Length: 203
Image (cartoon, rainbow, N blue to C red; front, side, top):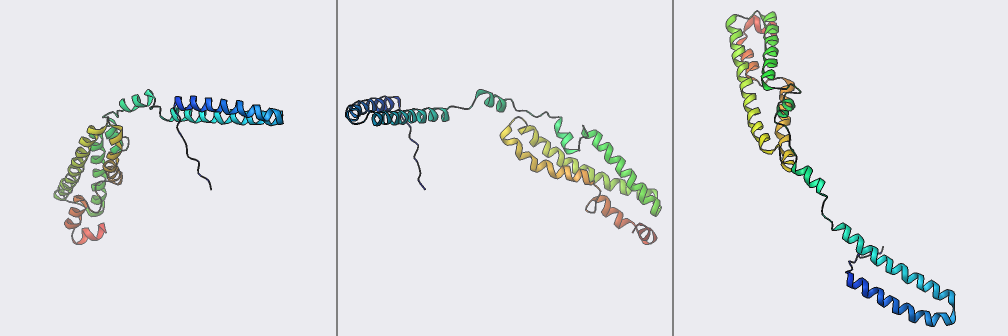
């Protein structure tokens, strides 16, 4: 396998190469014309193609050295993600954190009602579950606000913006799965609170 090294030619080198080629062609023509006119023509054609290749290589090198278009630089400079987009990403298209909290309250009410139908909870027990669930919600939104601050710092920086996704993604998954799973304060409180007949009915 042969490797061809790409050369860069200056304007002076191109001019000098062309002049030398012209002198060589003149001398060659004189010699070859006497022997074979068709051979002289082929030599002239080969020289012309060679010089054309040199010029093309130099032009290609100049094109490679051109800076990025101004439009690309402007797109980077004008990059910005709206601050309101953050809530929509975290809460799965729920537009605000206030609406997300309301959705969580509704989910909690449904869960406690399901337990109550199975175990006949006392009012004290309901309040304990509500208090534990409130702790889960507070903990989640504390994480949300930490990531929100990071988001606001990079939302106008395209190069740094991708870094924020590693923080956003776990919150999306947690919200979608629900905040009251096996590791939640709500679930641990429920398990510790139910005794005897209530526990057997719930299980």
